[in-house]
Image: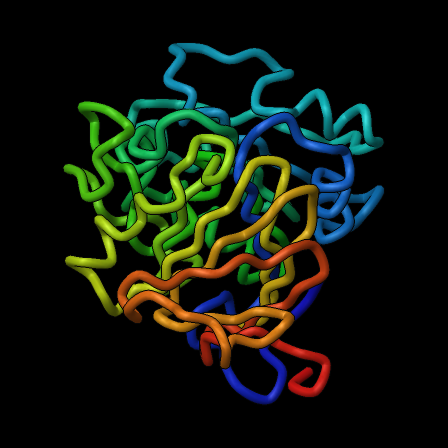
Amino acid sequence: MGDTQGRHAPEVGPSSGHLVVVGGGKLDDSIFQRVIDLGGGGSACLVVIPTAGGKEQYDENAGSADTFRRLGVTNVTVLHTYDRLVADSEAFIEPLLKATGVWFGGGRQWHLVDAYAGTRTEEAIRGVLERGGVIGGTSAGATIQGSFLTRGDTQNNQIMVGDHQVGFGYLKNVAIDQHVLARNRQFDLYDILKVRPELLGVGIDEKTALVVSGDQAEVIGASYVLVYDGSFWSREGSDLKNLPAKSSLFYFLRAGDKYDLAKRHVLTEEAK
């Protein structure tokens, strides 16, 4: 934990703390363990927010809270409401004031916006980052971390530019999609980038995560992260490739690959 800004304040990622942005699916324990480690290890104090799931009530095991306990975290609180007055109350946010980590479960990301945007709860969640903690989330819990709310329409999850367009913005000028390869969503982000070309598009497949500290992101997990930054990158180079137009480019990153979110390029060994 601690401040990650280094010599320069980050332009895209958080100025302190860490993000774990997960593409959904059945997750390996190693991804949960990364959240635990970044949240203080055995002494982590985690708050799990399952609200995106859309149920009226949740028990103490909701949103992977049971998994965190199984992996040794003893201080895990499940926090949920749809009532914005409750979300704006001192009593409700109390667990967040001492939390070292927050985890958003999956579902529909607009539920999180309707319940918490502009309330003391949203402010207290951001406070976890400011204290050097970790915010993680899977599926809807990944998308909410971007500034643009991908698939944020209340009608269905296929409308990319919907009636909710503003996420919590832990990653600035970024649109995040999830389940990308498992659901053949690799072209869907272009619906957003056509109308918001200044955004960085990030598509994360299932069982895969992007771990962010400052402006540096690293891929972990079993599959790939797709990057839509108007350029192309390949381990074998691209000089001899017949590539499509810049507006149609994307490329894949795998576990261990690192990316500079501010400069929008892959960090090769030479650049690191």
